Image 1 (tube, rainbow, N blue to C red):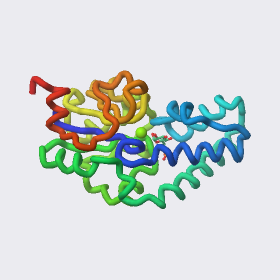
Image 2: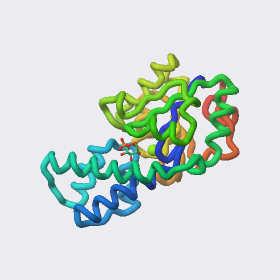
Image 3: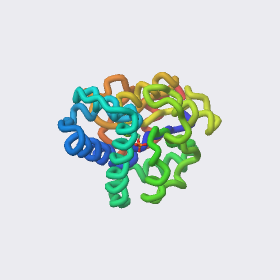
Length: 219
Ligand code: G6P
Ligand code: MG
């Protein structure tokens, strides 16, 4: 076990509900329908444009490309307004301690997010320097569940995928980690993240060593 690759939204910071709020506002104010929290589950880990396509299909609305572009931009403006109000208190439980212990144990750390806002968010909450590599929406051409984001992370760290562990809150993200040939830790509910190697509600009171004993007992 030589590297950890972390998703951002819903794993490191509590931004998953900001994405939901901003998409819901767009659906309510511009599209004339509502989206449930359950439907939102299927948007986690999905790129901005693909998310909008899924929302439009869900509501049975079709739009021309220019309007779609304008709505995706509007959603992002609302999302960024919410994100700018974030403080370090929005870092999820146990993350700071887990990242510090990971570094102390000599395990490499990468970010693997399809968000184009990833870097400014990490800067905003003051933990950008915790990462040895950052793979975000500006560096990839295929969103999750494609494994590109995690394979690029492993490559940039110089670590073989079989020695990597992915931390994800999204069904599409767990799928991406598995397709990359990596172990996966689901952050959320076991009933939702059924394919993950293990699932925890958060990383509070958990250590890299405990994880190694579960995922790599032979090492
Ligand atoms: C993450 C989130 C998605 C979001 C995507 C793109 O994967 O889980 O909800 O749509 O990033 O984020 P962006 O900040 O670029 O719109
Ligand atoms: Mg996520």
